[in-house]
Figure 1 (cartoon, rainbow, N blue to C red):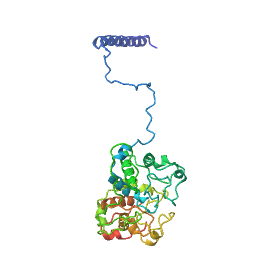
Figure 2: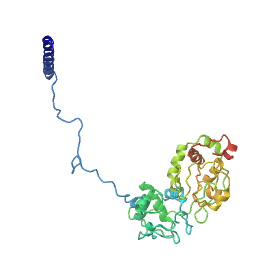
Figure 3: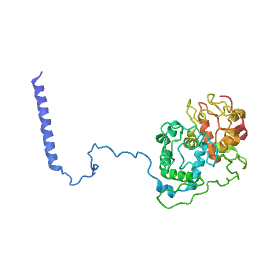
Figure 4: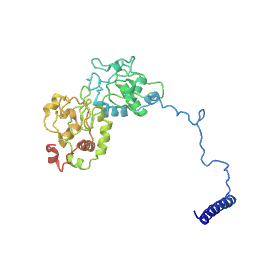
Length: 348
């Protein structure tokens, strides 16, 4: 190798080192590093534990809501059970069992209070009466209160709503239990329901009477402005207690509802045992049929096992129907008019 080239390389390295040293020296004089008297962001550690301490444990269950029960809104509790719980239960004295037992007189009664009803072994194994505390824990999460229960309802997470429901259940008795010793005493409301807007009152046994009001509004215009997302949200709040909606999903208390629109009544899904009334109804699930069914199942099919009182909001019915329509690999198009809504869709 040429010695001149080696000398040039060494000189370059020395020059760079000297330049780097001088730059750092000048920088130290221009920029002074000072430690701030107070940290910009204060980071605190929890008292009684180090930086790796465990987070506070989650509550083991619902709070004591005796005070809320004593001041609860009985009317709101009644409205809740008629919207949600009436799909499986009746509430009048001597009323029949549905999917679940009749709940008249449940507060203060044994856990298996209804004679002749087939309770799960999990619930029958719980000793003692339905106290306010027991109902609170049960309604918060039935599956946690009685593991193995047949009740598929997820529970009522809101303390206030649970208190309203329990306060209403308290009134379903000729001699209501004393209110919890917390807060002012609220007079018990009469359990009888007020007449509905159409003039119908609940029939004996807790089942609503057949609709006697005006004809249902046309479904085609409602479907044209329907929101299937709202329909899905409704089914996940109400209908999931008895139905599944995924492709190939299992039947529950009611049949799986995937791809139901356009199918034959009482035949689809084929692995579900429908009531004799549903089998005898005949026809297909057209948009019109679904509208009438969801308005009042017990009036649509005499003897149906579905004791849900129906969706009285016409637009919400359309939202649900539109959502059900989407549960298909080939959704049926929305109808252009009432004639098309009532017609049997083309075979899939």
